Amino acid sequence: MASLSRKSPTSKTAKPVIRRTSNGRKDGSVEKKVGRRRGPLSEEQRKQAGEIRKLRACLRCKFLKKTCDKGEPCGGCQPSHARLWQVPCTRIDIKDINYFLKGWKVDYERHTSRNVSVFNVKGFSPNETLMWITHGYGFALPVYVREVYVNDESVFQVDWVESHLTDQEPIEFDIRTDRLDVGAKGVSVDALSAYLDKHIDGPFEEFIDDHFEGTPFITEILKTAHRFYVKEKMPVIRKALKLKESTLHLVLRLRGGQ
Image (cartoon, rainbow, N blue to C red; front, side):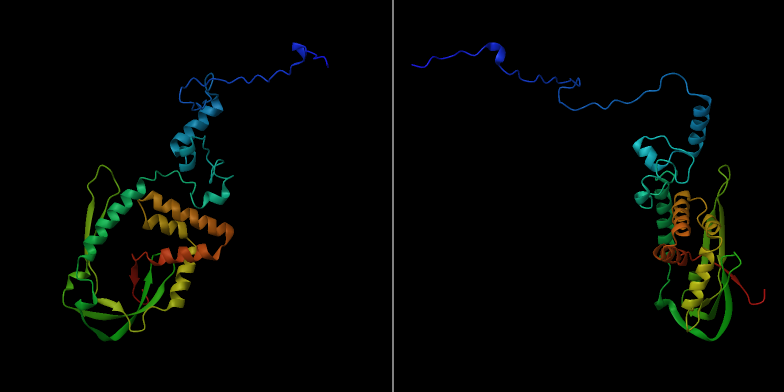
């Protein structure tokens, strides 16, 4: 009969001990530790904080609670260059666009409620005159125009409000335009394209500042897109800028030779 040998207790393999650190919460969620500054800011840090407070942190740094800097784009947005043009590095509060859209919608509905339609037109004059259309930056667009006859002439009445000072009431303007319409051949596409190209290759940012004065969110978005185009020269960005520029209908007219 074979003898049974007993193993020594010391030969038993010990199981590894796993220590679990308690996070102090019963639901098991991990509490994120936030680093805290010890001691006062240095002179350089205090100066930087003051400058950023004046500039305002960009949207991305504000959302991620990161330290922003004065760069354009800032240091936090530069590594995420692939997403930078989807979420531009702008320091403007996104609520500003709501103010712009709200005011634009009211103004648009007020003007479109007038009889601006083909049913209001009775006819056109057979005589056409050359007129130069401009935004006032040294470039002009030649357009042939003719007089238009309508049933309701209130469509030629244009009014707007300008407000620059906070302690002053807005100034109202009211003007009556000439009874003019584009000639039978319309606007030359080539001439219009060349006119828009001159603005994009020239004083584009100045033009945007003047046109969208008081709506900083819109100006920053368009400036960012234009700066990206200047750097990358992407045709699709140029086309988008030209389409946007062509929708800005506020123009001044110059009579030939004047």
